[in-house]
Amino acid sequence: MGALDVHRIDLQPTLREVAAKWKQVAGVRNLQFEERLDVQSLRVLGDQNSLRRLVDILLDNAIKYTPAPGKVTLSAGEDAGRVLVMVEDTGIGIKRDDQARIFERCYRQTKRATANSAAPASAWRLPHGSCKFTRVLSRWRANR
Image (cartoon, rainbow, N blue to C red):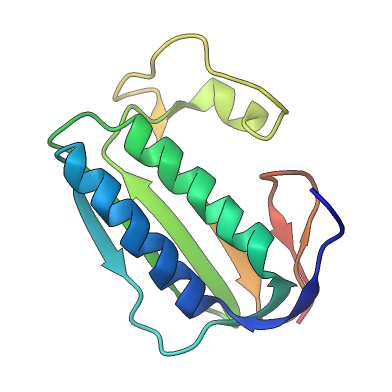
């Protein structure tokens, strides 16, 4: 991965493009795919290719670890001046004990999560303003 190309972008078209691709994949896997991207514009300062890649990775994992006839949802909106992008699924989840480690490079949970030990899938918040990766697939931090 080269240098980041950070500039002000509207994340909405990127999310719609990514959603269209993964909706087809979900259909082939007999999964329901829901897209809730009702906001007209989601302006952030960030690298469009990196953001696209991040959403691709989140949706790939959600679809990969959700058994049929499950459901995967991509939603985006604003909350308290921040852009919120969320991927939710009805898959196996992430054991609570493993959640702190999910941003470690190449980390993989060793045993399947159970309903009592798992947490919902991914969510990240992007304030309107600058965004940067603190680590690959890490939390997004930004100042308005």
